[in-house]
Length: 404
Image (cartoon, rainbow, N blue to C red; front, side, top):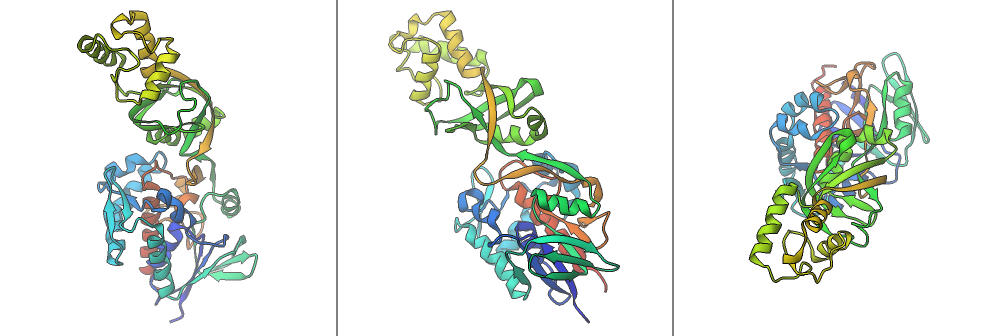
């Protein structure tokens, strides 16, 4: 029996996981990657450790981490979820570990472990990997596709489109008849010039609360002061859930930051109790809240309170100013920065045009889509990779089950 030709366009997580699960007795597979290296996002993920997935094994809970695609992914995760991902890698002698925040990494703490596993699996099947291969055009023929690259042309019985969300790749798929939801950045940090944050880069808060009053949006979680403004899970979650609205606002908006993550009344009680127990201390030397001394001194400076002032002499007005700066600090965001190198977008191929039983196109026959080219994205923590693994696995299972 003559093997069918599968062309996989893209050399990322979804592309390689699909190829790694295809039956080499049925298919000849060629992966086309435009860059000189494959699996580049896998390489840099998790600070070079590769955040493979997340220890969330209930599909209903898992989809809650996806601002776009949550309804569609429910059936996908019922078929292949993080537990299956762990088993797949462990069957190939990759030891994985679950960290305190439930992110899952290889025991080796190196993304190369994951890259080697995927590339070895593909090479073992004698599938072709072509780098520096830029797809210029895809033509539909009667029973096949003609994939034209900068180097040569390929005939494909089946195409797996896993390119990521670059404008060129979205234009290519649009030319074939698919609707595109405009791509906008997701998972980004907030650029803020504010005296509260100045020169305090690296200061972190265990459980902050950030809200965008105009959008009625509130998120909690760890937060970090950066050179440009604010980052950390609390910020990244907001940027993911409100990606479209923040793009529409041209990344100019007001936020209210609660550095303590507790309400004003509770903070006031804590302060008064501390003052009662330590009436002779100076306000500057008082360790009242779980924040650094440097940040506490900045708050006192903003509140126009002398560090040497005795805590028992703090007026009601001064106390309210301190608590407002700590728990209801209004700031102007004036731009965004990419979160590390892990650029994620909201947008891509319209999900109404995808059959989520097998990730096939409803527009194009024998054509599959997976990964960031779809209008699916997640918060940080291994969730974007999990969508790639699950979608790619479904494609491979569907192709493997076909009777030719």
